[in-house]
Length: 106
Image (cartoon, rainbow, N blue to C red; front, side, top):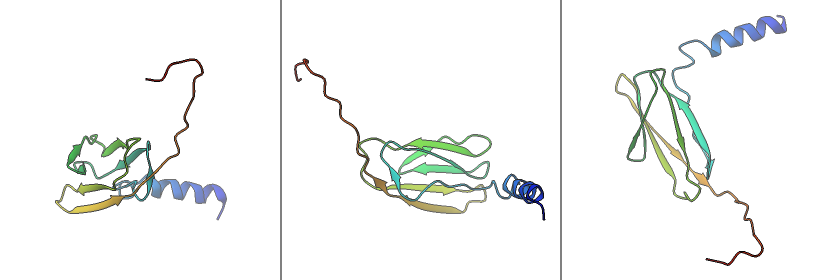
């Protein structure tokens, strides 16, 4: 099978409605990360106790705070009522610190 045909088949499968039903960006994430995911259209997504906005196509997005350290819980409810929970571990990030000479400390 040629490379072009393999690529075309891969794209058809990857872009099909069945493959696009749920993409969950979980596992370990770092402080300051932007997380993008996708659920079936009409699904609901909750981050801890907060309901996230979901686009008509099923996309959602949220950020992890720079000071976050506790694990996050992502709850997904599909249009048929099934629920799924994902635990997101928050890893620390080494934030660079800048020092400015000649400015009094607060």
